[in-house]
Image 1: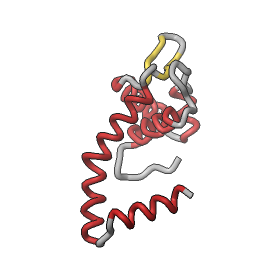
Image 2: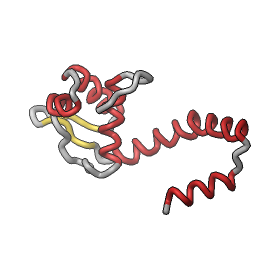
Image 3: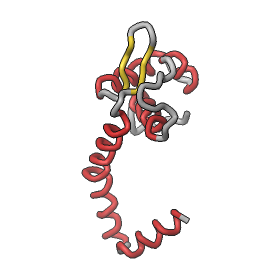
Image 4: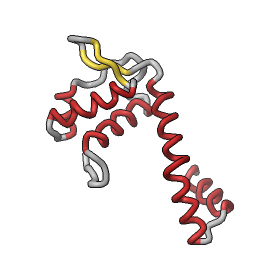
Amino acid sequence: MAFNNDKAIYLQIADRLSDEILAGVYKAFDRVPSMREYAARLGVNANTAVKAYEQLAQEGVIFNKRGLGYFVAEDAQQYIKATRRNTFLKTVLPEVVRQMKLLDITMDDIRKAYASVQS
């Protein structure tokens, strides 16, 4: 996995596992890979994966069954979507709108671009 310097690696790992949950790779109550396995898969230190899993567990996205590993929480997808939607609307969208104004991009331009991407 290629990491960027704008965000802590453990948070990028947490985002990746969250993406996999959203994509249905791991469904509610599915076991996710062990921290060591996931760290090896991504080529990172196991302690970094530990931090990512702890972050997701603290958020309620995954939960630990002692001796068995981590599992996807029942409402993980809904939680991830809600928090990401909130972040998008409060952080990303205002910057997009600012850029649209600077570049004279209209909502009609956006609709056309969106339609072409959907094809």
